[in-house]
Length: 486
Image (tube, rainbow, N blue to C red; front, side, top):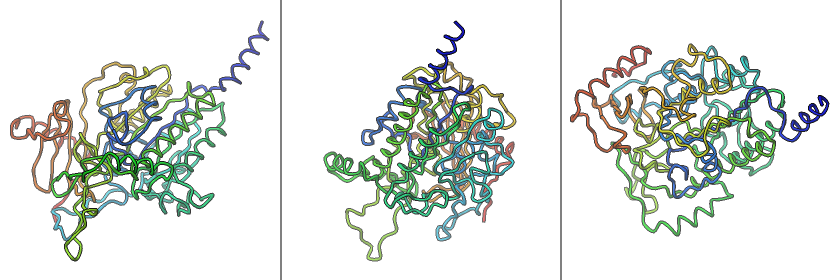
């Protein structure tokens, strides 16, 4: 009987895969993907069947936030569980400087150009405490030599360096020092997917692995995926007979419609990649022992300053400026801004034995929560002194209501999208945004006004002033760097 039992265990191991003691983690992090860029979040132009299927197999979050409206700070918060203010990375690396011609009110606010080595990353913690194999692929943007993924707890780094855009573009031969092209013309996203599948296939099945698949897509430059761009061009030709009208946002312009075939194909490339990796996990019998996380680092690039006129002062109709390559409607504005379009993100999690297929959560979650949540889910000790600004959302994943919380954003920088220094707080239904350049603030009731169209600052001065005080107290507590007038 004992022999038969052992033979059965061996047979099951051969057919189902030998599971490590702890679950694997695959974290899909997309660059500049907007809240409304996926079909399962409302897009009627972008086609994302594989990501939609992932949402149907797990839990979709409707109110998940990035800790900053630009990339590097959010990436730091995901890896450390600490707010960008606390790790002193509050702008994309190396950051923007205001155009002197615009006569900015404030001096440039200096912050770090790399994630400090004494910060303990999620990769380091999983490796040290849980004997995880750790793989990084794609965009890093948290420092160059000496601060690379392999300096921050990852065993493998494929394609991650100090820059935010793909070095040399999306088509080989690129100039990425951490990913050599195999053939001219290969598409970066497809190549990274091949590498991810090879890593999973070659991983030690006796030990769990943590993979951070960090796409360069859909960051500029907007370079179409040739596999699908013709498809989207045909759809656009059939569907859109009139020019899109821009939305004026302070001194900038937001796009009001998703209609860019090149951008749509780049979203589609991410979808194909996610589908291939998930299918390989299933084929390898790892699906039931792998946690899946899907997230974006900031809102979609929707808002940009107006183009300067040509020398002759004229532009053709085809050159009419309509903002960035995507639209975040019904959310306001996009990347670089503290309106919802800049910080609310698509987030999907599938945790075998925890999440119910097709479930939806309205719980407020933020990028700092990823570290403690994954530590909790894989059964390792919590480390609140490390992930000081994040909480485990495992109760939400089980459908259990969590305690109310406040979320804070501090973005005291000028950004190429037209944003000027400011900060924000969300407390329950209420959200306050402060604009330091003009000395003004705006107040919105998000549950009733997701598009932030009705400023209630004057109608509810007591709430406005209370939130301003809470925001300032938080900034003082974290020693936030405030902009200084010139």
